[in-house]
Amino acid sequence: MNEQPTYIVFDLEWNQCPYGKDRENSRLPFEIIDIGAVALNEKKEIIGHYHQFIKPVVYKKLHFRTREVIGIDRKELDMGAHFPHAVIEFFKFCGEDPIFCTWGDQDLLELQRNLQYYGMLSRLPGPLRYADVQKLFAITFETRKTRRSLEYAADFLGFQKDSTFHRAYDDALYTAAVLKEIPDETIRNELSLDSFQNPKSRDEEILIRRKGYEKFISMEYASRDEALRDPVATRLHCPVCGRNIKRILRWTPAGHRNYVALGLCGEHGYADGRIHLRKADEDRLYVERVVQSANDETAEKILGKFRKQ
Image: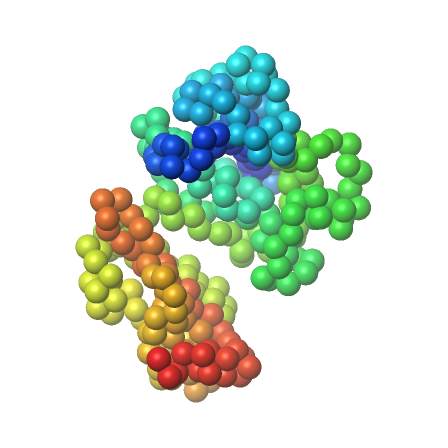
């Protein structure tokens, strides 16, 4: 592969504890056993392939769901590489600074979790911007909030299904085929952010703005109260113009570690704010805040549900 890839489309399959959740390794609930990827250039043409089975060392017996859904033969896994070697080869294949592309957000999370388990997380510094092809498919062909299976997308787009699903390399090929149908502008404007490696300080905080949408990832806090007292973490600006707006509903509890707020911009209408307090290491927390434009119907639903609390 002489040409540096613009996109790395990858898929993972993993195993879990076959003896129940109470006996799983809390540091590694899902152990990667299959990595498949294709490299694409800026024209979304395939310029490279990668596939490697991983020999399991944490959960040596396959969970029945893994056998049922993926259908991997245990002999194939026993012939596989150990994860540290496989992932080093994978990153060599990826080249320098590609855009990672996955179907949904789970694969990137589990890749980082497995890297952390082996003390290799520094090989993939985060937080990471990536292309969630499942989300991009929804935005392009259906509605922003719709989430479909990869097989559904393949059928929707009329692909010839020559390979099975739920095998890492085959799913990477199907995902790459869907990505080719997504306009370049949509990919650029709708990159997702994975915050498994969350900001540790004010200087590392992340703010993403698109018209009508704002996402903020904060530094860490020692407690919920500390996070909710921080005016930076709890800002509510108009997601269109960025100005301060009138708060119709102040940050109000909306379930476990979730909060909702509603503001009104005199020029651009309602702004729907959502805060989720996420766990960091050592019992610390960080804030993930999303503010987006809302119509009158959405605003009324929020007020009807939360104003009396």
